[in-house]
Image 1 (spheres, rainbow, N blue to C red):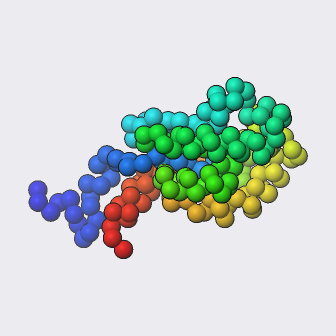
Image 2: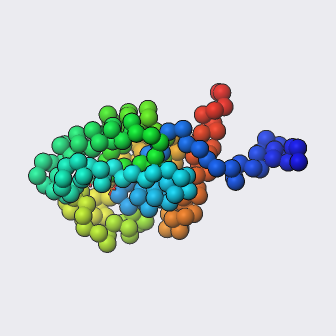
Image 3: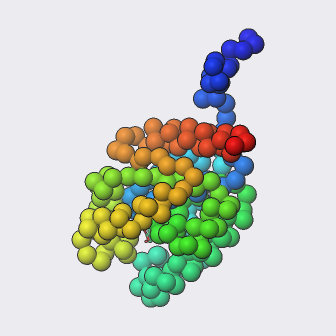
Length: 197
Ligand code: S3P
């Protein structure tokens, strides 16, 4: 019926129409923010491949991230991360989960901002800590008290993550619900990009 979709500028059909992504969606945020969990769900919902940058770095290096930190140090890890993310950003659109420090590296951040829609999954300290404390594979959390490390990284990194195109709160609610919020935030962002200022 004519006019039913548009009520006072709000397009009632929007929420149901499929979202088509013109470029890669890159998820950023601290360890435990849910980048992989939400990323996998998001990829399913959007019908796009899911790629985990940390897995790709491990594949390229032939060893684990913990081993890269141990053998070569953080600076070499960041250089490898930069190269791998740069390559992934030249691939067709997909959902890309990036390690917590990737967006903090100025060069990687510039690339991500140029070639992807960036989504910061913002989470509070207790949510992050609850998610990371069960696993011991993250080298940065082995240097001291993990909760203190996370709190320090929040102070350093949150102002930088805040430059992302889209910000969504990652809470203790079910991951499917957060994924839904990411989709709606992306829809609003892509719509705004199409609308001339
Ligand atoms: C890091 C986060 C890790 C991994 C590496 C460094 C960081 O990824 O890239 O251990 O600097 O925050 P996740 O955020 O996926 O845990």
